[in-house]
Length: 182
Image (tube, rainbow, N blue to C red; front, side, top):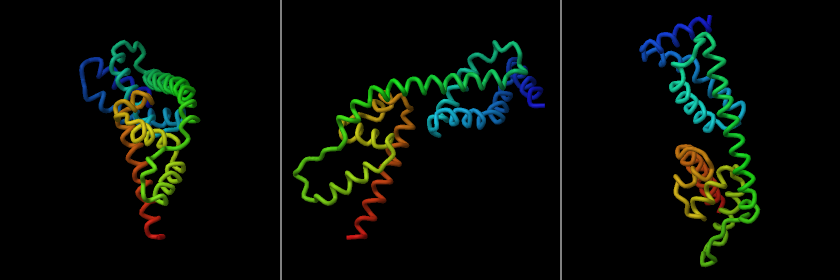
């Protein structure tokens, strides 16, 4: 049933009906995100991979000779892009390991009057997920822009913003909670 529907929609799209692509996206996008997530274990990255896969699919769909095989063909693209991301991140992770071990702590000038706040901030940053710690360090300590961080980590600017936002929110909540304790 699904193969027949895929075939019909692919043939319509190849014939110029742009609405057929909308229907394919409705049918397959969630599956693409789930497949990518299953491999990369990061929801934001999985969404980026699914989007990137759609770009490739749109570029190559007119060359698809067996429209009924759309599902397996498209999932292969998602799978390949996911593996590419994993391999790229392994290389980046290996490169960043040196940075990670050399920069265990964020340093702040000792001119700060509030030693307790500084220590709380250090401890809170250490409790963040590693990907958020890295974005915080690159943004606040190394003074990289969001675009530069996204290029360094090979993630989208949107993912970089999201990680920075969530890290800031966790820091704010922890610091507010600490204020109530005092």
